[in-house]
Image (tube, rainbow, N blue to C red; front, side):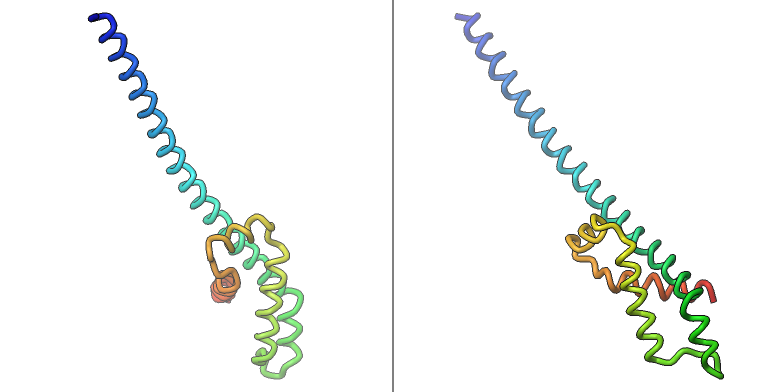
Length: 127
């Protein structure tokens, strides 16, 4: 009789322990997935910033200098600035990887604002 009680107690304890390990494993997996998701979002944002900075440099060399030279005061018009902003978005998005764009879109990040902000910040830095 005592053997049956001990055997049943061990089975119950083993079942409880296995359940506890399973719950802990699920919790740990969820935490790691959340951390990975945040790391992916951060990496995608950094890719957008890097590509925007690279595009600003390219536009500076290929377009901006010519536009400034065409004006006596050496300044861009409002329309030219707007056109450069559109080119910045177009060329930066073309350079970004599709997975990065998808991650940022899924995270509800305003990609256009991110690119424009990074571009404007870089323009201020190089002036």
